[in-house]
Image (cartoon, rainbow, N blue to C red; front, side):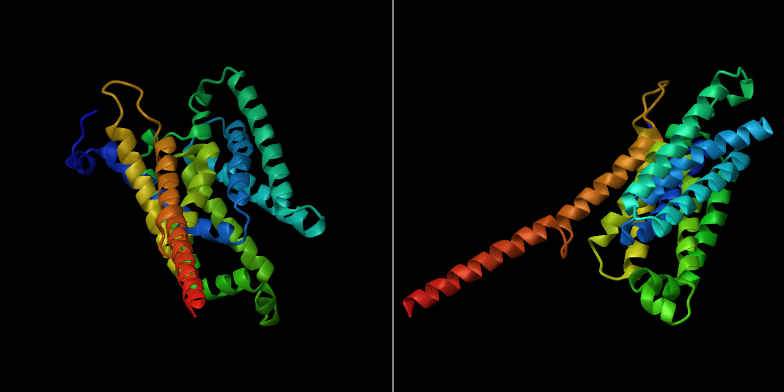
Length: 311
């Protein structure tokens, strides 16, 4: 498909897809930092996969494929799964990866069973429901973009307002508890914000790929800065760039009259490429910078040994 930059400004569908994907990346990248720093990157995967039974249950209850209703159902299901996983961590001796893995696989299995049952029911309204598995960015409308912007502003505004509390509870929960801050509630809040980010992304990249949009921008940002504030800002920028650029690339590279490249997959690949480049090229923590420092250290050691031999 031959597209010009002006097409993305004037065409309703193209503008909605690109803006919606960029907003998703901004919110998901920023909120994903908390999961990455807590070493609970699977929480995003858990919430995304656990949303599927909630989406199916909402469809069965309402009988319609109203996007807002389905996402509310998915959000409630994802929130239940995340709280269940946190409860397992708190009251059992299981490690985080085990608790999260068991939870998301169980909920996802229930979701697949419900989706299969709906598909075999013959209900014509269920057409397109499977799009939530891999995303359906082409269906984004201006209303969806407005909703993304409103919910994203709420989520990022909450992070900005509670930045100090969230930072201390993240890096030193014992000190936060001594100061009287509700550490458990702050943890639950950050998890709830992750659920919100996942709900925004299900329509764009789907259940299967959503976790990457939470993790990849945060991983990329972590390589360039040592402060939480800097990481949050950079992750938002990387996420927005991944979403907008990925959506634009998928549309621009789609063949004329063909089915085209899936926007969700291209968006995730873009985010992954940024993460890989950051891991390689970041000046402080990158692989190349580490290799250069190692070579310089070896050279200094050889010079010191040579100078000692001459004496």
